[in-house]
Image (cartoon, rainbow, N blue to C red; front, top):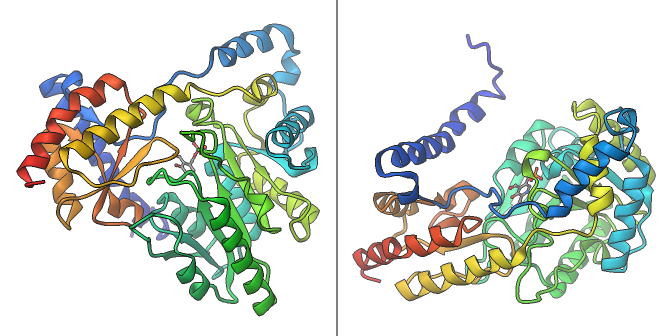
Length: 397
Ligand code: PLP
């Protein structure tokens, strides 16, 4: 009998595929040299954090009392930081949040866990749209919920709302959306969110239930060509926003983000208080204190979006010229490219032969596509394009 729980065993087994890709990257780098391996598999920002972030860290350590900077606090986070975030959101999105709506979290991953722990009873259903960030399934299972996946609309990768409407039942407790999207880079328009909001309202009435729309938005600030990323709380009363600075400030290792639990949410203060306790009992206790102080000083800062935009244009143009098909991403730093053969894992293997590492769409519940992360150097993209062209030629594109 194994020491590991039955709940953990499938997680350990699934981890081997990601690990294998990581190991393969290392092996190829050892044989061919790191500069000849084109690793597009990770969503790890390559753009440095804004200079203001490093400056803030130095200033805080010099200027603020050590016991404050490194101490325990309210499990919801520092009040001045939460106030500053609410004010920044109100300035930028014309919302009316206050400190009592903002709960500091250990990144988006923890924010999602906190809100799911707060909401879910065993057997509750959570719906999301393929392709989706695969951790959602693990997070929902942490609280014995059941994640159900709405099939993708592969023409646009906008959410398939007709199917969503059919799939909602009296057991549906939450719907998770992610815009700008990982892995497609698609942004949900105001029109889409209006339709989504009215479907959820209709279903709440029909079933006499509450359905929470969880908007997972670590890529909110990464939008190109001036495309607006509408603020989701405006479209539906029972919305909770899950935000992270991992991408907007290039701080994924620092683990800092927040939840927005608006006043409009049913039983808002009760949910907020429960979420603060969930933050404590899931073991996070509170979001990293030094990083909270940094956010206080850098609340309107942003990493260099231009660099990602240049990468996006180079990669998109290069892949299109080679003959690949792809919806041009409007946000995030991913491209979701159609595999030239139905089994995209074989296509990934053909890429690997050119020392190009990409992630199969089946990792996002959307086979037949691959995800290419372009949060890499411009030079890596430029030097990978001849390889992509050779692959396209071999497929007769
Ligand atoms: N949600 C999505 C869609 C993501 O892509 C990621 C990370 O890549 C996360 C959540 C987790 O973000 P964080 O690093 O803030 O925990």
